Image (cartoon, rainbow, N blue to C red; front, side, top):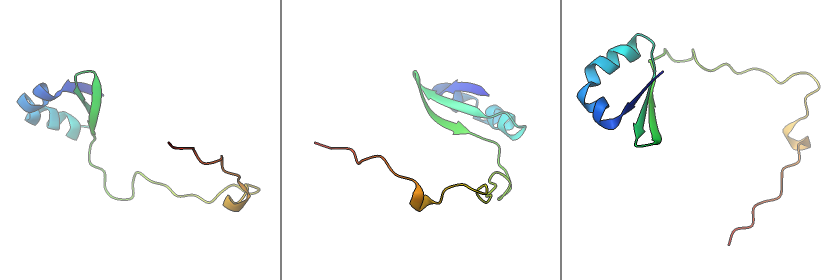
Length: 72
């Protein structure tokens, strides 16, 4: 993964996008805060796998939730 500041992204966009295309993701930073990640494009359906729960796993109705937060 490659980290860049916004100014560097603007000045080297073409080169950085070629790096992304070759499989190297980029994290864009504003100062010390990460604000975006640029990832290589994947065909639809290749990044998510939906599976059935394990046998014996509790149903959602059986799982107790924490109490709601008290807001001012």
